[in-house]
Image 1 (cartoon, rainbow, N blue to C red):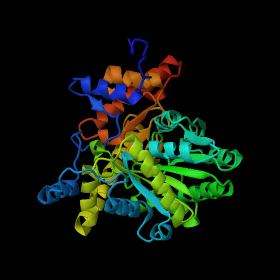
Image 2 (image 1 turned 90 degrees about the vertical axis):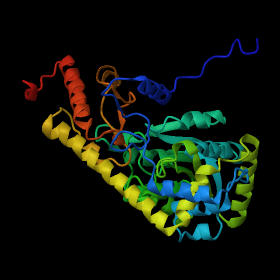
Image 3 (image 1 turned 180 degrees about the vertical axis):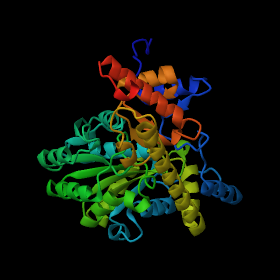
Image 4 (image 1 turned 60 degrees about the vertical axis):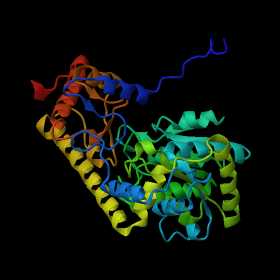
Length: 414
């Protein structure tokens, strides 16, 4: 009786994609969908440093007690240094409030909730489009609307600096702007350091509040360079919120380990902000999972394991770069696929934003068993020695087929 009129939730593209890929029993299935790092066998890869941290943790046996509401203090200290750097003056002067979150998604939700409850009058919220699909529903969930501007120039296949600067300069003072710190999802196109400098100065001039979501630190240009925008904002004294995830760079997807950092004007404000977020966490989920944060803490407390982590991240970056080069070579030199594919080698992180139509993406799934969302975003790490040539041929086929349908004759296919 109570639930007779309840309607189902709206479609979730990535949920449907994963279910469909998992159910596909085709022998040559390729999963380029959900953003986890896959090894050369197409499988989940546990980091060696995490294997050792698990052994250390099992030996010490910390038990299964609750963590305090805001999270383990040592973990938060370590996590904040990964993000802001050991020498961050504002961090050392306690101007940054940090709390543990249920990975990066939970940090985004906490950031949205904090803004909706604690910043008055309610600011305008902006995000560049296309972007990660969870921002709008996460902010809508707490009663905030999001306005979009163009993040990506499709013609140039690059970050749209002019549109971003225009949005920042014309927004009402004290607006909120959501950015991804590195390895942009889905476009894989990040601002350069010079472009970040322009954006940050514009944010400062407009007295805006940036919210940085950084889910892939270490998988783009390395741990320090990937955090450039956040550290530059900290250096210049901007207030900001930073949503940090350890899902991707520690391969702890299911452990939901992350943090929310709020950079404030002084230590007193940071203490009040942390206490306010403590109450929000307490009312909503009481405390975050402990296991993932214990593993991260075990790694980053050990210089040897920290070095091993940095080394494996470097190996992952190099493999992603190599796969990009191979896909680019297959499309441009081997198959001579129509179109401009240079963006593949210019992009950073897990993803590549292929210029394919929703119909072409659907054909790749239905006909070729190459699973990807309809926006053309592929998980590069899903490519490997066994499948990369077949994937390239499949892309070539759907591109040429569409051109024939449009009445375009490819000289190379005659």
